[in-house]
Image 1 (cartoon, rainbow, N blue to C red):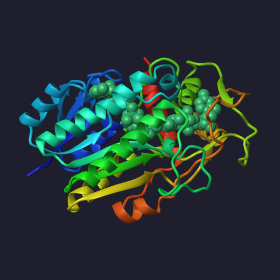
Image 2 (cartoon, protein in one colour; image 1 turned 180 degrees about the horizontal axis):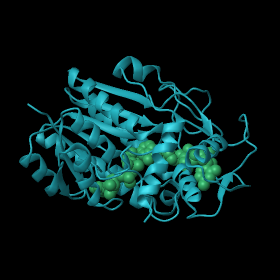
Image 3 (tube, rainbow, N blue to C red; image 1 turned 90 degrees about the vertical axis):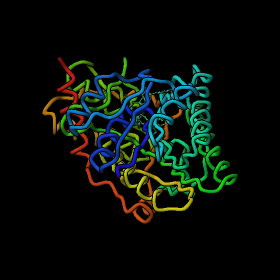
Length: 336
Ligand code: NAD
Ligand code: WQD
């Protein structure tokens, strides 16, 4: 019998791609999302791709009654928790919104799970918990440090999960630390839809290539990296989605466990690498100017992926060119 999985934030960027991957792996998905950063259309698009409409509940993870109702209506075996706010800059302006959504929201969800006796939980953490890396590649043992409220919410929820794991037997928890998710489903039916000016590099580059924005500002070319621009471990969102399926399989096989694992490719690319690859695949010019470093940015960051291979039997397979091609196809499809 197919296992039912609750995906919070399943209408969002990573959640929608993971819902597709879960359905294609034979799971039945119920999405719970308040649509604060996504739209209903995404659910129809998921159905178009997989031929299966996921269950959908429009609700907030802080709404205990809604959670109770979902757990009563569906026999949920596991929860994959994406719902939350994710803009680093905004988190410094509105810290309480971030602590309420991301920390209180996770606590409310976990309380409802505890009551419903559901003990399999996969959490969207972030490489941001490593702060400015002391060593590359970054292993899961690297000390954690954060410099903004968003990062702090991830760190706190990681700690809450550890406390629960120590306090009660039977929990199967995966804390997945994503590096830089980019790209889109190859069908161009789902992808990332940033509201307003994109904070992240890839959607910004795509909008410049499209002619929607005139110039990319590159935040610094004086870092200690091969070409002076920032280096990151970009990972295709479909690879990331498969990483969640692998983590769920892993959890199902354990009696109890607390797994913390990096999801990245293990390879770093600079801002200029990204610009050049995007120009090549789109055949469009990406004009840029070098400006001052962005506050809080680090020079370079990429993952040690050994543990993910060892524990999950998972590794990323899509290269930077495919990431840019799929992001470009999505950008073209989104533009009227
Ligand atoms: P997203 O904004 O596209 O998706 C989040 C979804 O959660 C949205 O559909 C939103 O409507 C929903 N949501 C937010 N608050 C909610 C609430 N209180 N109740 C119910 N639904 C709510 O973001 P994403 O990029 O898909 O990120 C998913 C998760 O992964 C987040 O927790 C994020 O912090 C984490 N993460 C993202 C990145 C990244 O670069 N995208 C990197 C590391 C970690
Ligand atoms: C990548 C590179 C920038 C925009 C952020 C969060 C992190 C995680 C992923 C959630 C850097 C440069 C960018 C631009 C640029 N999210 N850049 N011009 O900063 O690595 O990570 O998203 O957990 O927490 O901090 O990603 O895409 O913003 O930047 O030059 O207009 O591109 O300086 O070197 P980042 P990014």
